Length: 154
Image (cartoon, rainbow, N blue to C red; front, side):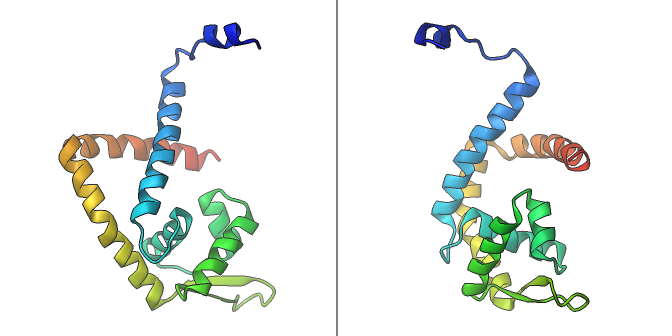
């Protein structure tokens, strides 16, 4: 494609395309803001794992976590190892299958997740004041509907 062709290329006139395009841009912006605010040297991925484990309150293997986060198993193993090095999780042998591992959040990991939420609160407050809480009360149920569909149709 030559430069003039690129300039003539049109964005698809499709609301689903625009929805996913907006989500992609927002994901980049959110990642940058989160990682600036997160304490303890946490990355967005590491915070996500701690948050997931606290919310669900169950032990999972690296493979199960990788599936939940839609990442390759080696990526999740790396994330779990980094969290273990910080003392936020323990990676222990699976009680029923000694060949596999289980990731278990530690008290320090629960506390790190709590510190992260405290550190993120000013950002949430600022955004809520700027846009109004109603935007989120209206949007979250709609986003959840799309998430559930996508999750059920992986």
